[in-house]
Length: 109
Image (cartoon, rainbow, N blue to C red; front, side, top):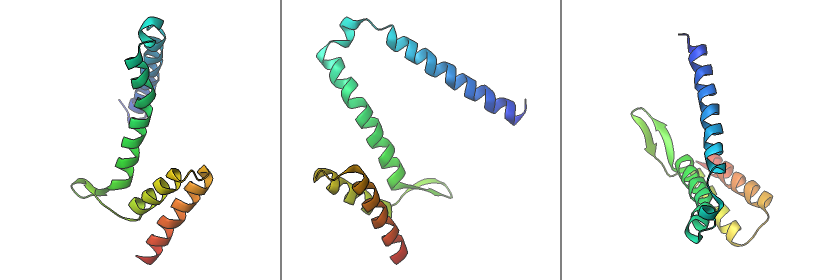
């Protein structure tokens, strides 16, 4: 099997898996979804997954022996973004300011 065939099989398999997962979610009875615990988990799960993704992207870098923990300009930009979000700054201001902080620190170091 060629690499292109394997790639397309992986893409089709992932698409089928996503469709089946969505179908399974639609098959859950409404009474299950109305429970307070389920509603709380459903509301907080996307936030937790996004926070985990951000943490992995900010604090890891490729190394010779696999990913390694780093604290660099990305961490400072994340801190600035968090402060601006607490201060309720507009989203574009948060993004551009964090990017400017990261770029400035990378320029200096």
